[in-house]
Length: 58
Image (tube, rainbow, N blue to C red; front, side):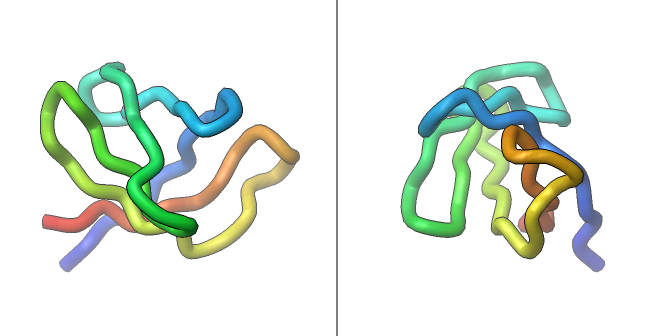
């Protein structure tokens, strides 16, 4: 089962909620952590413009 989380966006970069590492965009709706190698799929917009709700791929 995949879990959901919110990530904070800074342009095309973001902060990983799992390890606080750097997330980088790997497509229109995906982010990849360069530190813990977790992939996040965007599933919804967040509460404001600088957040998105993501599903963590396991």
